[in-house]
Length: 50
Image (cartoon, one colour):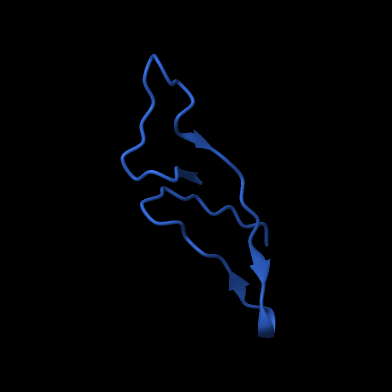
């Protein structure tokens, strides 16, 4: 997931790590369904191993 607390955050020379990718766990809910909550204003890649 690529997101930050501030929706206007960005990387710059002064703050090169303002927005960084990070791993977030997904869970299995009732009935074996995949449960994942997308963060607002984020870019998310879901990688599933079947």
